[in-house]
Amino acid sequence: MHHMREMISAHPDVRGNTNDALIRCIEECYSCAQSCTSCADACLAEEMVADLRQCIRLNLDCADLCIASGTVGTRRTGSNEQVIVATLEACAQACALCAEECERHASMHEHCRICAEACRSCEQACQAALQTFH
Amino acid sequence: MHHMREMISAHPDVRGNTNDALIRCIEECYSCAQSCTSCADACLAEEMVADLRQCIRLNLDCADLCIASGTVGTRRTGSNEQVIVATLEACAQACALCAEECERHASMHEHCRICAEACRSCEQACQAALQTFH
Amino acid sequence: MHHMREMISAHPDVRGNTNDALIRCIEECYSCAQSCTSCADACLAEEMVADLRQCIRLNLDCADLCIASGTVGTRRTGSNEQVIVATLEACAQACALCAEECERHASMHEHCRICAEACRSCEQACQAALQTFH
Amino acid sequence: MHHMREMISAHPDVRGNTNDALIRCIEECYSCAQSCTSCADACLAEEMVADLRQCIRLNLDCADLCIASGTVGTRRTGSNEQVIVATLEACAQACALCAEECERHASMHEHCRICAEACRSCEQACQAALQTFH
Figure (spheres, rainbow over the protein chains, first blue to last red):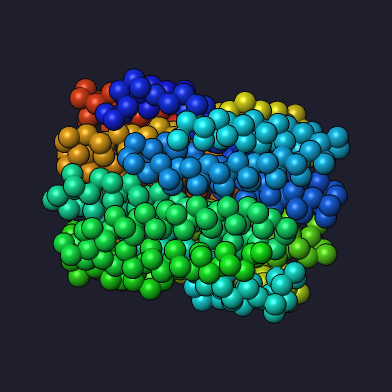
């Protein structure tokens, strides 16, 4: 995500005073959304798709929540902190469950192994960003 | 949303045993997303747009969370109840804050008055659906 | 979508002069997004999921484009007609392909039968709305 | 977007035979969505917000189409090339118009200058990816 820190720094209400944990979290959210969308489609293409139904569902839910979190987190400058907090909590939850499910298939499917890592990384970034809202 | 109840009833894991509070909630979520998107654009067109910045932001956040909730709620049939619960909680939060802000402008702007109603209605539908997950 | 026509009528740039074909189209878009999300998940739950992979993919693509069209169509008041036109064209395309695929499974799966109808209805509403932009 | 190329390479229908122009395009789409969401909110915070209404609208439309394109492009493995093509065309259109509008404000607002660059870069990546579908 080239430009991202510069973009946020250029915001009239931010002017250099960036929340670095939130910036990292936004980046992880968009990245994890892409991984989960990709993993859902790869699972769908596997011969054993019937065993991957729950993985596909959690991938899709996680992708939806990651996009919502990336967007709401980016649009942060008002006093909508309660909305960001609730959104990041839902996202962290979705990432944790999706990671857990993907980990079950990690030894058989490389896409699940990589996606589990992306979800864990995003979950941690959400938790770190949540620490800054108190 | 014609078809909605029929669609959900036709799901192999549901077969008639529908969660009516959740169905109503999904319907309200898509409807509220449309209202909030519309209110944001109407606020942007008002002469006094500078006084409506926070309203626009909350409208946009609320629309994003309503779409996420409508989608995740529709894709509910697995054992992803924790994700639904966290998503509906974030959505109810966003609806409550957006309603509160829109209510401040309701006497001056008809679109804010209608949108506040849509948000309150969606917030209640989320709360009612949340009651069913225990 | 209660409120929808009222919301759009209350927009400062619209004031009663609504584009009814566009309003119907927006409504169909949100409704079709819900049907496609629901059909994708129902297909995933079918025993013969392996035969429904392409249906699931087209359902998911169609849902994404319907939400984009409903949102961009709602946020229509500026001079962004070129964007609306291109978005509705992509949406009509996705609806046509998804309808065609769902029709193949309509005799076996009630959810595909209903979803095919929703897609055809949305495709026609997009075409009718496109006629108004010239 | 760490993992992205690896994720797509791990897909059973891809297995190393990646479409590099499409991969770059997907990356630009998520990145541009973030820039446009950020620019819309920064414009909203500017004192001269009334002069930036059209910029905000085009930013929001562009963000919506970039997410749709990133998602549909990622979920590419079936025979849904017609849907990808129509979606990338709509996205390239939205990027071009948003870039043009942002360029008008680039000398006054750093966020518009950066966002215009992100939109041009994404527009070109969409065009390059479109070349590969023939």
